[in-house]
Image (cartoon, rainbow, N blue to C red; front, side, top):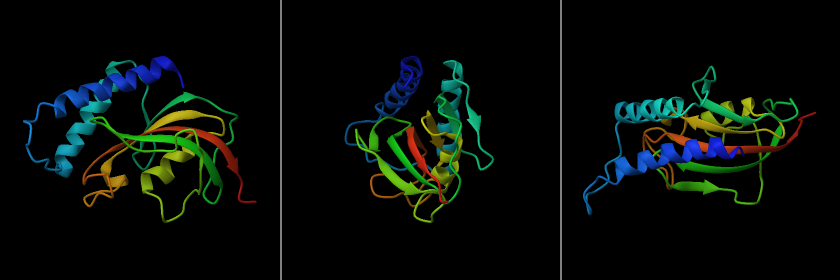
Length: 166
């Protein structure tokens, strides 16, 4: 991925970590309300724009930045996508990653969060980018595993291959 773009995203995460680190040691973590999370997300997006990133939005509401364009073939529901990705929180910290491996999934299936299904459609085969998924399009008010409730998610994604349904 483009080093300059990665640096900008990392700087924005460092700012988020600095804010979170202001909590007193031993202070219990209380997940943000939906309104608080929306404010956190908007501040993060403003930081990225101020760092010179061009952020687009899908019709559903997933924010994205394309780092590099691939071959122009985009996935549609039913296609099998082969990706590499790292998922992290706005405030810092990786919650999931394929590492050097790839992960295959069928786009549009029920087992995936809405923001992932929607956002993957803007990254073409061989392309790389970032998806910024608001909590209501992710795991929402319940959270999931290591993802707390009302938490927006950021994914660095490489679309390695698209296997068409037909």
